[in-house]
Length: 240
Ligand code: ATP
Ligand code: MG
Image (cartoon, rainbow, N blue to C red; front, side):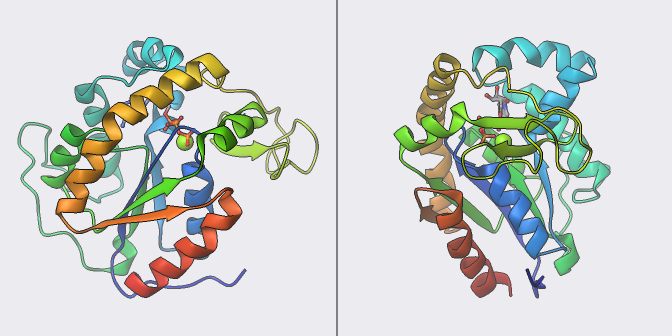
């Protein structure tokens, strides 16, 4: 696939129900636009859980049960990540955002997958760095549910596979490292339904927040393959 370049800085967030394919779209976007890098709040949290950081230990109970982790916890984690990528000034803190003018350079383009998830997280992010495209991904819930059952992950990298439509080259093994694939502990049906309920509770105020700012764009599809070309086209027209 040919890669493309942005002419303007793209600061994108992906919003969608659990299992809608945010991670899949982020991976595809990064392949097409090498200037883009992605931060996934779920991957960062799972990394913290695996390596047993203090924050990871605290977050684990929330994640396992399908609840959101508290805003303050996720804000701290994301702010550190944004600083280490130099997307926000190293002087910014959760209480004193002191935002600088965001870089207009196309190389300062990024995708946030899974953050912000609440209107409160969104307004905190606004004071750190302005987002210029919010992609709301919509897929019927019964389709997502059947996909979750066949979802496997390579935990160390966060790479996602699906035995129905995006199978690994060798069964049960990561394509790049050959290491074993595992199931996410929060991917059983009951926990997923709770995650979906949390999403339903929090997403409407979140999307309204961004709609008021005029940066909301909605895309629908029954599969990730139906969504990707629409997403590519939209990014092309906005940032290409
Ligand atoms: P997908 O299935 O598309 O990866 P998801 O919403 O199920 O999406 P993640 O984004 O990986 O999964 O998040 C997993 C869990 O991590 C959430 O259920 C929640 O507990 C926690 N989490 C991730 N991001 C946030 C956030 N911004 N605020 C609060 N909790 C979060
Ligand atoms: Mg994800």
